[in-house]
Length: 110
Ligand code: HEC
Image (tube, rainbow, N blue to C red):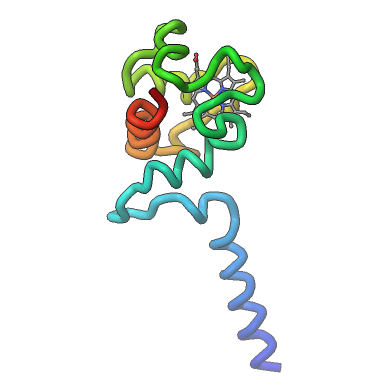
């Protein structure tokens, strides 16, 4: 009986860690920008494309055509996206993670 309880508690705490955010960067941990991108953005932007709006990809050229030129502009888009895109507030993606993702996009998709 005691053992069952211990197992239940162990499983419960495990599932708490497995809820959304479990993949999020913990304090002091290095941010893996590619990993963050794949976790949050790649569903709709595989390889920097855009499955919903093919004319709004993450390529430098496309973004520049829409006034997005710097890391800051990309972060602004995440905080305040256009129609069809998820909103990523600071709870979902911290400022540090957002900047890392933006930097990754700028250097990865020409
Ligand atoms: C649910 C699908 C979805 C997800 C997830 C998503 N996006 Fe988007 N994204 C879109 C759509 C749709 C647009 C076009 C919105 C518009 O018309 O303004 C877009 C547009 C953009 C643009 C502007 C591209 C351009 O050429 O103007 C940027 C930058 C961008 N997304 C970055 C991101 C980042 C960074 C993430 C992850 C943190 C992300 N998106 C996650 C759907 C998504």
